[in-house]
Length: 215
Image 1 (cartoon, one colour):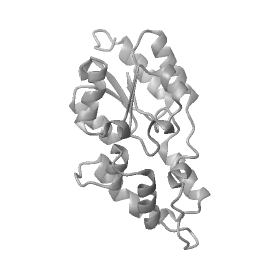
Image 2 (tube, rainbow, N blue to C red):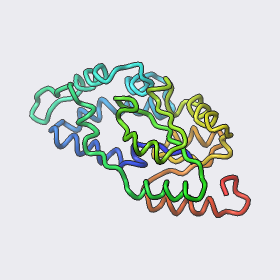
Image 3 (cartoon, rainbow, N blue to C red):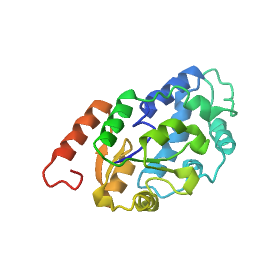
């Protein structure tokens, strides 16, 4: 089992970002205008590079990304957006989903190997709870540490290679369409995460299916 972090083990990214925009009183239209093309190129069919690509690969520092994004934003009262600490504020409302922790623990108790494959937005591994990483995962691949990112094929190959497995022997759980599509094309069994309860049901069905590669 290979899990994404943000939006899967944590609360939905859209909820986290919405809370930040409201708390910092940022004009939502300016955020959408800046981020929509970046996200489209980062996770969609568009091959153009964006600041998201560079941040997730660790090619752009937190401070550099914050400066670029803040310059494209405006407050609801027309004032500039403070760049310093922007990423911390952006993800300040993120909450770890206890149901997902319980699910991973249950899988491990049944002998299933688990791994994390996450695109990092700032701070590298310091942005993740180290105690939980050690408890929940046999291996951890964080984009900024390895210089590659989802949905690039090479990071999926790296993740399964470090487990000495093939994609066809793994289930990949993510909340982003582009990442799911990339994993499917490589032969992974995929689960498009929307909420913890549904993901548990889907995995239960997968692992109980006769003849399943993940049974």
